[in-house]
Length: 471
Image (cartoon, rainbow, N blue to C red; front, side):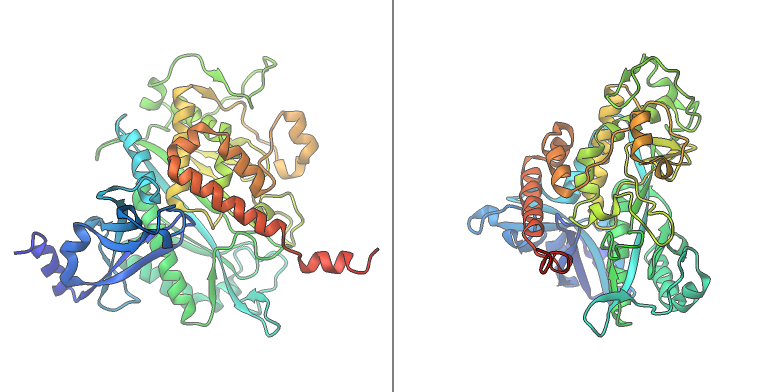
């Protein structure tokens, strides 16, 4: 009898006859194949097989035993898919040569989580994906799916929300049927842009949930003739799509407390004098109190700030991402994307927005791979904890209003302004590269530098209009 007979029978009784074995490539795209339920043992044992070099970011050869990539199913992720009758998704961890594959994004996050587990800690994240619903215009360009969505300040617009209520309600119901706790849905600050928030979870489960959300949203949008888009900034004059992370650190166990809460164990764990981070003031100025976070939490965000340039390569991983991370004009009056490296209490203009017992990391955009960016966040935060870095005084000012001159006066460094700058920072950052592993670091840098080169060599319509007849 099959070692997984009872599980197989339960799935069959639930009407499941096929498994969607899904993994995530380096770019954060869902990949996989359909496998009949009768082969559940294979999926949970050796795993579903794939040609390794056909997957972005593996760097695997075309021949030999290491040319095969196997996605070994994690049974805890089995979930029926409402939009695919009789099909259940199971998330796979990459294996090569019978061993966990170093460059599998989910394995990268597992390694980071193991570092937390060795200290008795668990990271919980609440990921807030923003996205666009787009369609092709008659001229072949991209426009919002709702052609009546034209307000100069469209945030929370109930008219457009009402017109898209069918899609949004179906998306929410689908996610709820898959076990996610959907908290809210709203119209965001650009035409055709929306956001769905679901409850926080342990960081691996949270990344799995994000990928499930993308699968569902793509499928449901397609039935309506729309394109679900997580492109960071499709419209130059409007805000782009972020994927903000709400982050908290907890003691392991059902009764574990939040270590970022002031007065928790997070204040007792680190009582030594702090080491001043390079971005903190060194003129002896008094530090403002940071009532929202424990000492451990402050060390953690200091690590996130210290490694921000390298983290940008993963959190803002496309050429287009850096058009979002800019102090540019917007029809709404703001872009809502961070530009300088700062933290502040409930400050949405800062890179890190601190809140009671947690912080919101506002750097990631919608194109970020949730597994890689979470693993890199953990590595940066633990470096801040281990070196007892100080985040410096909180920024209470509107940093968008201050502008570059104000940032310079406050001694606040800025984020990379292009993908190539971020890649240089990543390559020079041993902590973040170590979290990714040598294979994935090498492939990520290689492929993303090729992406930058392709962009740099492209002649755009803007260039032709500006220069073709100018000289």
